[in-house]
Length: 299
Length: 265
Image 1: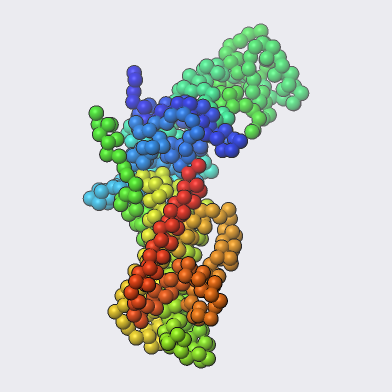
Image 2: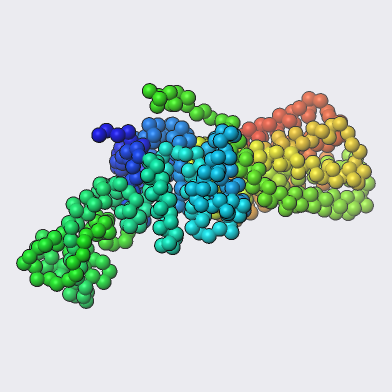
């Protein structure tokens, strides 16, 4: 099934002084798929994104984007790559259309195609009616859509989305998911970093869970869930003392648990008998896997 | 194999399309703030001219063979060049990487730091060339006679402006916070500004100060503009152009070095 890889990382290491932000990372993003990088804050997702545009230079390892070796050939790669940064960096005193025009130049779109590219981006972001609005007059959701449209103006083969919906209302988030899903169905390769589990579960064909700079698990979301959390989870509520007992008992049965704030979730409960613990049964989800693999403590 | 072919057409350094992209961004942004920037670039030298012209001009009528208005009118061209290049370069660059994250967006496109810095310096140099002429034009209203040599003044402004813009970018690239600029303004720019010969001649300064002044690009710019207006002095002025070009080239490389360190980690 050897599909061409849009991104291929092998043994990539990136250190900042004493901190190792990316620690021996391997990553494959097959062309035409959407891969989600899932991990807690500080797991190395954003550093990985910066490595892919050669805004960070790896200390060790091999990086290939669209067949180009980084960092030497990163400019060629960037010409065919679209990037949506985590931090909004639109020119706020310019209009929507002017922002797109600037990037039509930066991405070297031929003069004859510039108009069409801008119209296409406006349509995609559903900002046609706001083309003459200054960016600082737009809502947060519109700005985010513009940021994504700006990254797509040159019809890139590969798009990097760094936390595309961070800090947005649920309604706006769903709107952006629809946009990203449209891209995906059009065959654009997407690498998306997120710490929203639902986002990864909905959009990504493959999820890679990162922790402390390296991959701790990778695969389609449903397979990851099955492999690490089984199909059913027993969720037990109670006082902290009771929860500790439940944890001990479950571990005694060889089951894995995770804390869920006010409750304990017993993973891989899948129709087990002979366990006297009472609780609510629910399907296992990606969040169970995420917490299990990246740890309960906040680093 | 198509992939090999694209790789062969490897993108080079300092590409025109990359420079154009950055310049277009500046030009479009300029359309949103040109009024305020033109206002300050026009009003400031006019105030200098009026203040020094009427203030000093009433005490001294002639300096170094020039009417005082002519002396200041030509001298403040260099000041205007400095103010419209070094200052926007320091503050603008810092704001663009620290607060607006503009450079992150540009560097994610097929633009390298070298191209980004070069285009920014070219843009500010061009502006300095235009705004630098304003004091001279104002002085013409106060009796400075037109001359053919004045047509070279914008070019002198561009060359000096490129150096000062690169200087500003270098400073911004090394600054930890925007307050750091105070050190540079107080310890570097103010002395250079006063040791430039814009408002008074340097003839009465001690010898060592006069020697130092020759290394001051701002002084070279002041003298060059005066000679452009009142008559060039052959190879000496060519040497001055050489000093400005060398200053520009050195600062340009230092600016690129500083910004690569800042933007690429």
